[in-house]
Image (cartoon, rainbow, N blue to C red; front, side, top):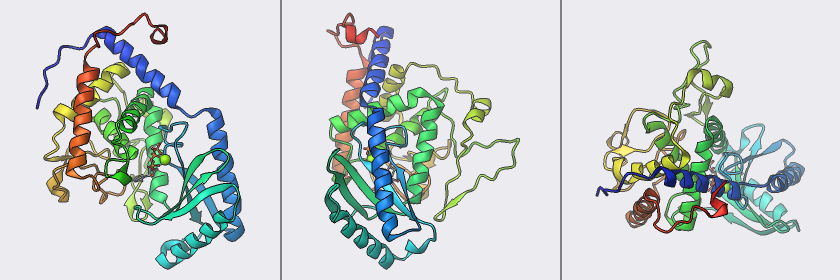
Length: 342
Ligand code: CTP
Ligand code: MG
């Protein structure tokens, strides 16, 4: 269902770009939020090392991938130097021991195991700072995809601004919670990166397909049976990748909404960020009538696997309506509003 909208007003695009910047600036974590999380991380690591001297605690998720909100949760994962946690009985034993230790600590509240998640986690909350914490075990792929997303935000500042816009929209319209049958914020960010790779001219390269021809580096790096290679030499990215797309963030935001309402072929294609070539649904047997989104490393994982057709209709409605609303300059907007003028 194509919608015919008038050509977008240049002045509206500029206002929209300012809105993108302001939403980003207001959502971003403050230095204080970062310090608090770092302190929790250190505190938890010390506590776990009492029971397991050979463990380390790693943080991942939106606080470290460039798309964090000041109130986002803290996602951490416990990693053992030897890989003994592979066995699932051992995982349960470790989780139970952590659970006991956490429950007896006065720093953390509402400690509970969440076993129906994709990876078992212990969910808790820092009492004083009111920060939600998810603790998982040996979640190495999440550490890698956090680094990948972060690298994309470092290539171009428009990436994180657009990420804040889509996460903000998803939260505002209640379409951003995988545990309630919609999509995770991680999935929306993958959709965003896919769009930024596919738009002509592209804003982003495909880091998993990029290689430095002067170096004989292998494009393979293994992590629990998956290839987690991506090009990460940021100073050199500017040599081998010329981003020629100069659209303002506001224009890209409207194009993003247009892409997922008018252009993307949901019937046949899968959203992917690991290759520039189209990825077909029938190749992977992902034939459900909703969007399909491939995890960049764990290629058997469809990030939209838990999305019901009904919720997919709801998400599409939000995208179509946003496309209509953001695509034209509102009648009564006051551009002399001082808040809009910087
Ligand atoms: N993750 C994943 N696969 C999923 C969902 C999440 O690998 N299907 C990983 C990603 O690294 C993600 C992290 O788990 O960044 C944390 O997920 P979550 O807390 O749900 O999202 P965030 O990206 O942290 O965003 P926010 O908490 O701000 O909503
Ligand atoms: Mg998080």
